[in-house]
Image (cartoon, rainbow, N blue to C red):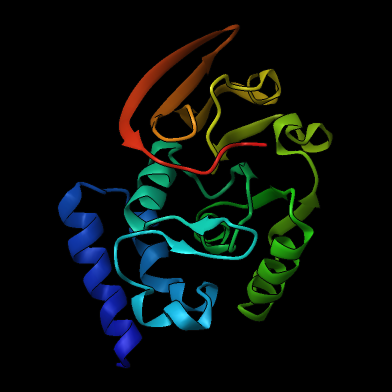
Amino acid sequence: MDQNENKRIFMVENHLRRRGIKDQNVLKAFSKVKREAFVAKPYKAYAYDDHPLPIKENQTISQPFIVALMCEAIKPKKDDKILEIGTGSGYQTAILAECVKDVYTIERFKSLQTNAKAVLGDLGYTNIHYIVGDGKAGYLEKAPYDAIIVSAAAKKVPEAFFTQLKDQGRLIIPKGGPWFQNLTLYIKDKDQFKSYDYGGCRFVPLR
């Protein structure tokens, strides 16, 4: 067992499971996905620390616990079709790809998605579909989705996210201003949406 594998096991047990993450598929995915593959070389030693790290285009790779919390909130199932807003480094994309049938991931920075696609391809993922564009518009071509997971903050949730969800679909999004947000889960019930607060967080703005 190499050093990174030891760190990965420690992360899963101490930063995720002990903090309340219970979904076994999510925990299994975190045990498998190599976060160091998605982290820039100067930060690889910190790949399994529980905090965000910088990537290109002034974006970040989110801390493992927040990624796990968001993934668990949408209750991913093997036959699900998921829309991810914000490919970023591709780390969360890989976690989702381990848990569901298809992941459609949108990134507005072509450079970020090109890099993420290369890493995810090297790791052997074939169930990820890549779109470069405006995440606020969602991706109508493959709607509706079992869940939508948004890795950027919005003061107001774009209407496209609600309309592109299946009935009983789940949407998780950081809602708030540029400095602080509440991680908010919405569950679609016909034309109504129930919301649940998952606590404070801080993400880059949805643009």
